[in-house]
Amino acid sequence: MQSLKISLPAVDEVRKIIMDMEIMDMDHRIKPEKDYGYIGITSPVSDEEIEKMKEEVIKVKKVRKLLNGRPLEIEVVDKELELIPRYPHSVREMLQGKLTDQEITDLRNSFDIIGNIVIVEIPNNLLEHKELIGETTLKFTKRKSVYMKKSPIKGVTRVRDIEFICGVNNPVTIHKEQKIRLKLDVSKVYFSPRLTSERKRIREITDDGEKILDMFCGVGPFSIVIASRNKVDITAVDINDVAIDYLKENIRLNKLQGKIHPICGDINKVASEQLEGEKFDRLIMNLPGTAYEFLDTAFSLVAQEGIIHYYEFAHDCNEGRERLERKAAEHGMTVTIERCHKVRSTSPGMWQMVFDCRVHY
Image 1 (cartoon, helix red, strand yellow):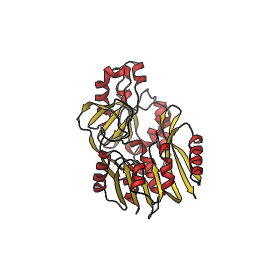
Image 2: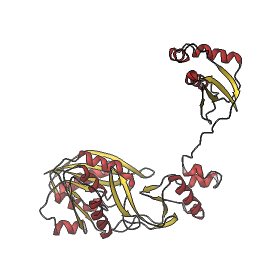
Image 3: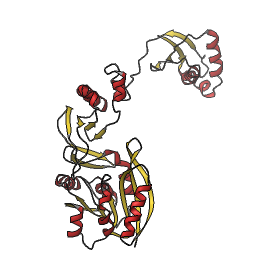
Image 4: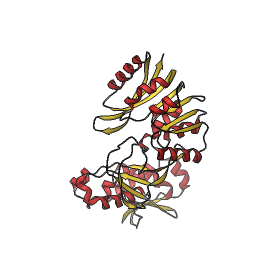
């Protein structure tokens, strides 16, 4: 292929020039060889242009020093150069030519990666291609298994139906984030890898010595992340007995600064039977679909000047703010919403919101 043969000390300066001229071949690697470097070009270069390059490059003090009196050489030659591998940037890109343009548009480009497992969502009109989509996703992500969502999250245990598509049919995995490990079965417990930044945020605003209640803890992502760095005392509650079993295993898997006390049960019943009279400095209510139903319990357990991290699905902050202020008033309290922000998008115009709510008696 047509290339420029350049005295090695001048290669970088010539590269800059031909990039500005928009004639550098970006598909092939620059090749150093003995005293010369070779750069592919996409258009012919005249003798006059080469002379101008030499005039420009020789002005660079570093080049003159490295040449050490030798002449600067630049000439056009034929040279075989190594092709730069071009990796696809998405599953959609990998499926070009295998699905129609409309089918690729309909395919969701996002998916959840939990440990070595990928969970995809495939529209009904593409179900006939689920094996192709699964195999392509497996190749793109380099994970071990691909499962497909078969239902929304449902029931008090917050699980969804999933279908194995390809790879290794094993729904148990270990997910790593924030230097902690979480073991879980994606078919039997709820877990969202999309809350990594939110869990880190809560950990970083937590102080040593706090007494914390994780009201819907699942396998313990919030509790484990917080306790990994903070000397805290966390009561972690969930109604899903499988999730609590995994939480206990995750406590053993991780080196924690704080203590976590798992409890299996409905938080309302646990509050009245096991936590009566206790007050917590920080409460985590990560159950955005129905957390509002448990606000009475939360306000009964929060300490003076304590923080409730309340999550809900909403368009903006207004409804949640009004809900928290109204519920606090029912308990003879007031609240300051110290922070309200969007955690993640759930559908067009709808977000999972979080409210950092400080409670005053």
